[in-house]
Image 1: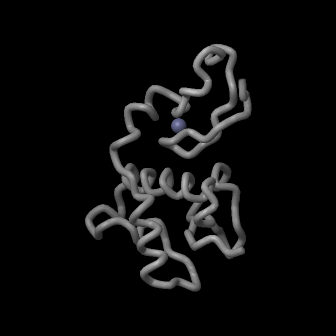
Image 2: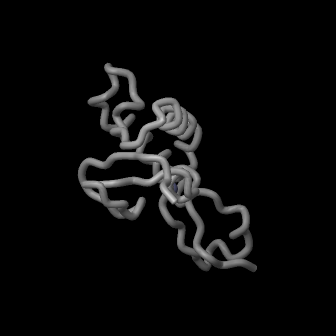
Length: 119
Ligand SMILES: [Zn+2]
């Protein structure tokens, strides 16, 4: 069986293989019950890609650009945008940057920006 780590399809963070998943590791998609229950709440992946492609952005967007004005200060909604961004980054479609440097999708603090992946 393939015991390599995989990406949680909800929060976009790495799931390390654990012994308790021995029998059904292939089916594991989420790192926690919490992630499983949130999986379908809000998915911004398509919105992020559309925004980046529409603008033909040479630069980047702020994650809050994805949200309507009344939600820009909403921390919970911002986290959903970041979750979608992490998944897209792991998928190789976008890059998450801070100060023009590409950061690890799972290891950043503070404000980030998103841009299409550059080859
Ligand atoms: Zn998760």
